[in-house]
Length: 182
Image 1 (cartoon, rainbow, N blue to C red):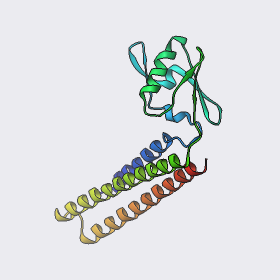
Image 2: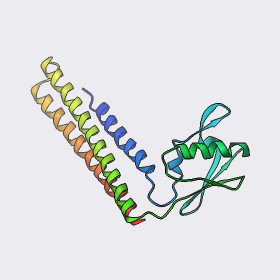
Image 3: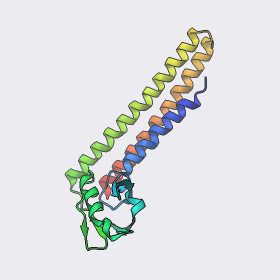
Image 4: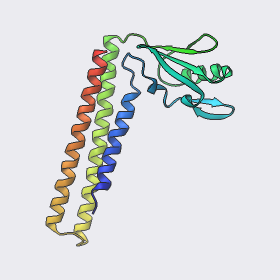
């Protein structure tokens, strides 16, 4: 049995968590919160990055400059339809998204969300461990591996699980601190 497959699944869980954390806005402008927004570009859903230049001119502002001025209304519509909670303002050529200062209460809500997403990631890693252990037990029952090999593999899987749970804990801690100190 190759435990690399299970390690890759755990790594994917960690990278998914980090992607989710990028979309949690912590008071400062981060252009990645726009990554999932799709704009209707001549009938084709396109990513915002492919139809406009996105920049961060100030710490709490994102500026979006469409390649074509006719796209401004479509981009505004897409931003309003998304769940980022920002209202776009345009001057006919560019769209600005201003990030309001976060209140203490909102920061605490965001930290709860960070922890919830982290817990979900830990559950996913533990599910990978369970799947791996089930596979190991089946191989032992089918006499493909010995009892000693089973024990060794289960220990390796547990070490992997501990390693990724620790990485998730670090990610939770880092994002929580970022949200509370911005």
